[in-house]
Image (cartoon, rainbow, N blue to C red; front, top):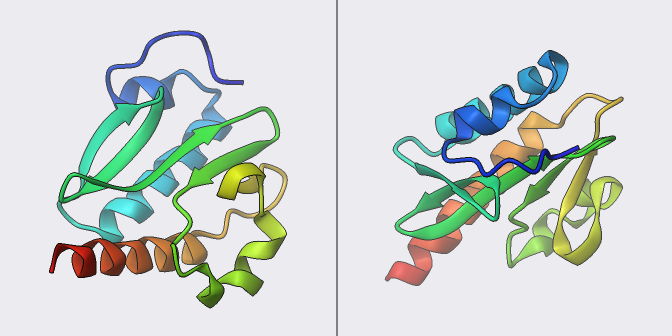
Length: 122
């Protein structure tokens, strides 16, 4: 579902999708930004990317039937049970489009990743 266009901004990326998908992507973006105020936004690998202290915090993409979320905490044992229904390939998560997106889980992952990044900084 990802168009072949080269995106320069997250807004461009989101606007390239149908309105129902745009709503999900905007809510996901808002969840990340509210959880990690001041996070840097960019496009990397043609996906919306969020960085904290120049370290990858999270990124996501829209596909035909799911939203891909990439940023599994290194210590994912804390989330193993919550993550298991969404497990995708290579450590990604897949949130089905036909089910509610688990924004609370996204918030927990972002908070955990923030702690991981901040601890590595010390």
